[in-house]
Image 1: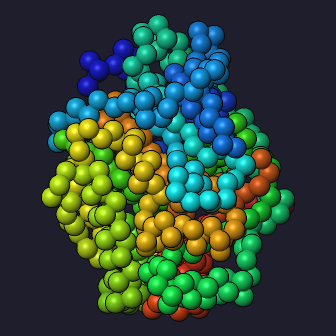
Image 2 (image 1 turned 90 degrees about the vertical axis):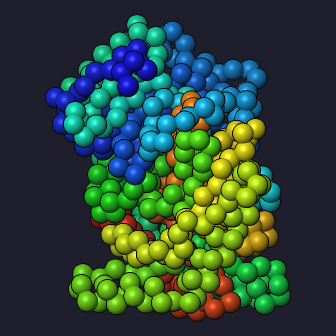
Image 3 (image 1 turned 180 degrees about the vertical axis):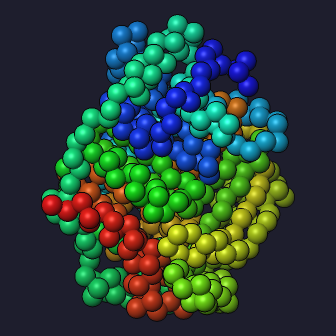
Length: 450
């Protein structure tokens, strides 16, 4: 593997967690972390990046003085994120140099509907050629595809920052994070969805509610505790100026694998976990036997099969797993898996953008579901229910669904939670499911209240 890089050096003397490293590197432009299903990677100082905010696209390129110069004519994403689609080795996807970033729900939804838009960044993608990966036999290792002189310069900068204590910003909530809606307001929105379903407008709507507060300091200072609490396979972090995104997501959106293979693993169906083993097993069994959750999951499987078929080779779409139960720290989830082969003339970025937002967090049919979501939720979701991930230069990559995630923009901090509403749903149970999913994270966040 070393022959792929101009520089590869172990940093085994720095036996730090990902959160500790991020805190030491917090000053670096484009700082991003992905747990990537237990293949941790931290990237920084992109060669170039593209940012979309307030419906304005900006493209920046790093100059020789380590500053970023805005380009007068931004390149279209589909032209810039131009993967080679030549991966052939049947190995597990891992980052080895390419593009990293996020696509927010608002940006993705507005491709098809008049969704509200948050003032914070709506999309960010950077081209990263220097990064740290955690290798189980070596610890943190620095890799770079930059020219040797630049790579050595970046390595020395990283080494110097890791060698000193992280600056502190004393993260603190000045206003507790709490539900924007009352229970009565949630039920009113729920009832409106049932009316839409009975009228034949839709089959399922993913109704979510916002939990909002105020805070100062760096959200990153809470990351270690959130990642320990959730142990989420698709955890991550991104900082862009005064915007921070902290992901504790358990859900994979799309895995772009070698040989043009793509896999999606939607989550639909939730039951709470309990400390008592017997009670926990009973909760899991209720989910296994829940016809309502199976029906809800199957609707999304059908929707995603349809989404994939637009970009897949004819006859290649198949369902590998249906209604499997995966247990996470706070909840049991029902998960299915769909696989397909991407057409040779389709760029992975094209599929990611057009398939976003994911069906598991919109509903069916998808466009009508997003229209109803915009009408009833009224508040922009921002990055929540978008996707955080990466593409390698060979076309492989992995993107999550941004659930169980915290956003901080300027002084505003927010979390969201929700679930799929079908004709078989009960308002009280759906309302409670929101809290089953988010209460542990919400309670932890509010421990930082002044």
